[in-house]
Image 1 (cartoon, rainbow, N blue to C red):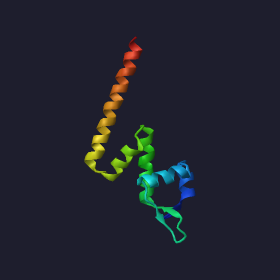
Image 2 (cartoon, rainbow, N blue to C red):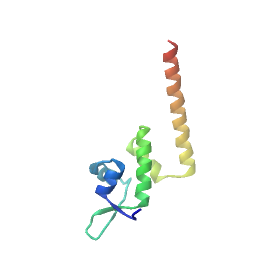
Image 3 (cartoon, helix red, strand yellow):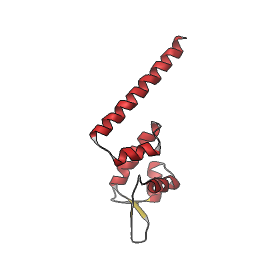
Amino acid sequence: MKDYYKISEISKLYGIGIDSLRYYEKLGVLKPQRDVNSYRIYGLNDMYKLNIIRDLRLLDFSMQQIKEYLDYQSIDNTLELLHEEQVLIQKQLKELQTKEQR
């Protein structure tokens, strides 16, 4: 595994458009380093954040919620996030069960 990846490589690896990666940077969610030619280079920390972004987007989290989570990431925040998701899933299950009983 390489230490750094260029934006086009990250885009292919994660199936994320280059414009989206630039948008994440504009929001301050990602902060890729720059090489001597001023190209963006993404390291392991950026890849870690991309995994979190991908997973939370699948759960319909907004980019603002994701940014707040990444900015204040802690065990307590993670547990709170998991609890909120559990409550949401339970609510959706109840709704589905109610529809099935009709």
